[in-house]
Structure formats: structure tokens, C-alpha cells
Length: 125
Image 1 (cartoon, rainbow, N blue to C red):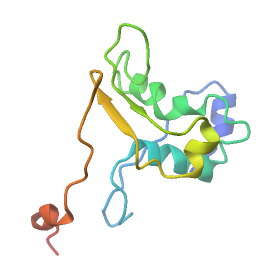
Image 2 (image 1 turned 45 degrees about the vertical axis):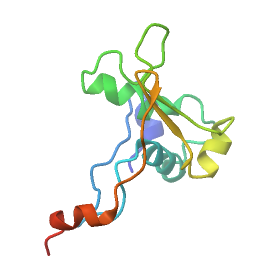
Image 3 (image 1 turned 90 degrees about the horizontal axis):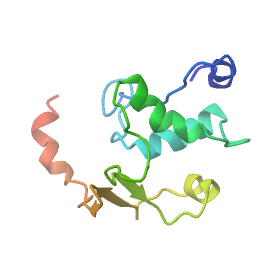
Image 4 (image 1 turned 120 degrees about the vertical axis):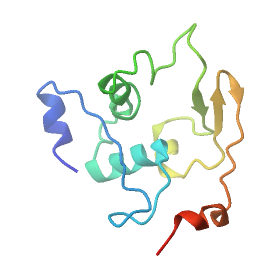
């Protein structure tokens, strides 16, 4: 982690993410952006006040990557989003949101994770 608060205070667009997933640098993880944001809040002390730090995991990375219009929920756009049982940031950040519903084009998709055995061929020692 770097000086996120200071970067943002100087007008820089701040984004969080991670690409070290089940590799020599970080042997865990599954590219779950909600988990990435939750960890960034905890590690980067982005929670007091939480403000609009969620943009660091939604529209800011999309904009930086040139994905115009992504990372936002707006009337008329495709309903690609997650629905959580949490009522606010405190509840969202306090518990892992395993029971989330993922919508793609407004329809719930299957979010069951594959069995690890399906990855055996990729894990060559």
C-alpha cells in the first residue's frame, strides 16, 4: 500500500486492485474485487471517513482502463452489479459477503465457485 490519502488529496484518481492471486507473491485470493476493496479499506485506513472510497474499486479503475461507463449504476445502463445483504458500509466491510447476488444484464448469474480439482492441471509443481 502506498499513500492513498495523500495521492487523492493532490487530485490524483486513486484505484485499488490486485493481480497477485495464487502465485509466488500471494498464494491466496480469487480476484474478488469486493474482497480487494475490503482489504484496501482495512490496510489503507480508508474507513474514517469512508466517504466515496468505493470509487477506488469501481468507476476509477474502469476509467483508468478506458472502460467508459463501467463501474457505475445509472438508469438506462446494463444492470451489471452485486446485491448485498449489508445495509451500509459498516456491515459490508465487517463480514464477508458470501451470500451476494451477482446480476449481469439484470439477471442473477450462477456464482458457485468451481471445485479446486478442476484446477489441478494448472497447478504443476
